[in-house]
Length: 216
Image (cartoon, rainbow, N blue to C red):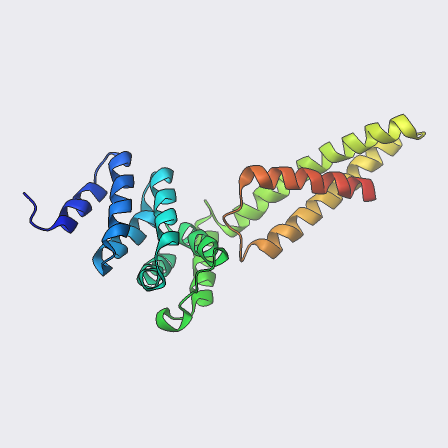
C-alpha cells in the first residue's frame, strides 16, 4: 500500500492503459508540486498516445503562473532530445500563443535550442524541416493543378479558351504560382508553426492555388 499519494499517481502515469495515464495527467496537475509537474511535462511531450498528450497540454494551460514556471523548463529541455524536439517545440508554440511567458533567462536561449532541434530534425529526415517543406510543396503543386483546372473550367464557360495550348499554359502557371507561394508560406511560418493542422493546411493550399491560378 502506498503511503505517498504521489507515488501512486506516478505508478498510474506509467500504466500501459492510456485511459489511466490520462487520469494520472490530471492528478499530476492537481498535485501541483515540482515532482508532479515535472512528470506532467514529460508525459505531455513523450507519451505515445495523442489523447494523453492533449490532456497534458490542457492541464498545463490551466496551471497558475508559478506552476507554469516549473513546467516550461522541462518542456524546453526536451528540445535537446531529437525524438521529441518537434513535439516540444510545437507545444511551446501553442503555449506561447495561449499567453504563456517563455522563461528565456532562466533556461538559456530558447531560440538557440529551437535552431539546434530543427537542425537535428533536418539531419534525421523523418520529421525534419526539409521533409516538411517537401510535403508542403507536393501538396501545393497538386493544389495548383486542381485550382488551375477549376479556373480553366470557369474560363471555358465564360471566355474563348483555345485547347490545348491555353489550358496547358494555365495549368503550368497555376501549378508554378501555387508551388512557389506554398513554399514561401511554409518557409515564413516554419519557425513558429510546426504544429499546423494538416486538414486546414490542405484547404488553405487549395484556396491559395485557386487564387494563384486565377491571378496567373
